[in-house]
Amino acid sequence: MGGILCILGYLSLKNAITPGDFALVFLINYKIAEKLLEISYKLVEFIQTFTIASNAVELVSKKEEASSGYGVLENKIGDIVFENVTFGYEKTRTLFQNLSLTIKNKQNIGIVGYSGSGKSTLTNLILRLYGIQNGKILINGNDINDISKEFLYQNIGLIPQEPTLFNRTIFENISYGLKDASLAQVIEAAKQAEAHTFISNLPNGYNTLVGERGMKLSGGQRQRMVIARTILKNAPILVMDEATSSLDSITENAIRDFLVNFAKAKTSIIIAHRISTLLNMDRILVLDNGKIVEDGTHSELVAQNGLYAKMWSANSNGFLGINSNI
Image (cartoon, rainbow, N blue to C red):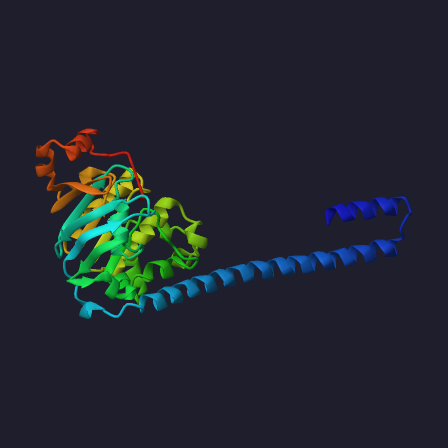
C-alpha cells in the first residue's frame, strides 16, 4: 500500500495523473487491501477450525478402534505378564526373543538400560502400540489382544518422554484425563504437577490455547501439563517414561517426591534417566539388548557388581546421561 502511494504521489507531481485519478486508484487499492486482510483472517479461522476438527476425528477414530477388542476384564486390573514374547521392529532385527516377565499387581518396577536396550518398547507393547510376533502379554490372565484399547487407555496413565497435547485450551488438555472434571480438580492436579504457577501467569490462564501439539509452551511446561493430566486421571496402572526429562532440576526435585508417592498405590513401571529416582522401587529391571540381564532391588543389584552397579557408579548422582525412546 505504501509503495502505491509513493508511485501515485510521484505521478501526481509530474502531472501524469489528475487528483481525481489519484483518489480513484487509491480507493481501489484500499478496497483490495481490505478484502485481502479479510481473506487472511478467514484463512486463519479456517486453519484453526480444521485443526480442531482433525483432533476430533483422531479421538473418534481412536475410540472406534478401541472398541474392536471384546473384553474389558470387568474393570479388574491384575498382574501384567509377558509369556515368551518375541518382537522386532524389522523382520531381520529381533529386539525381544522369548521374553518372560511378571509384574505383580501394585508392584513398583524401575527399568534401566543403555540406549537401544528396549526400555520404552517394553511399555509400548503393554499399550498395544505395536503387535508382537510371538508369545502373549496378559493382564489379569487375559491376552491384551482380547482387551479393548478403550479399557487399556482408561486404566493406564502414561507420562511419555515426548508429551502430546491437543490444539485446545490448557483446561481441556488436562481435563482430558478425567471426564467431566471440574476446574477445581484441574487446578489441584496442576498444583501437584508444579504447573499452576506458570498457567496462572498466562494472560488467559486455563483458557489459553496451547497451539498445535502444544508448541506455544516450552518443553517443560508441556511435560508438566501431561503429568497433571495423568494425576487427574488416577489410573490403576502408571507408566512413566523419562517423565521429568524436560524439567529443570529445581522443578524436577519439587515434583519427584510427589510422583514417587503417587506411584506407590499403583502398578507402576518407571523408566528414569536418574537411577537415584528408582532407589525405593520394589524391583529394578536392567535391560541390555532386549534381555533382562539383572532383576532385583537397588541394594541387591549393587551387591551383584554387574551392569547396574557399573551404571550406578558412573556418576555420583546416579545419572545415566543417556536417554532413549527404544
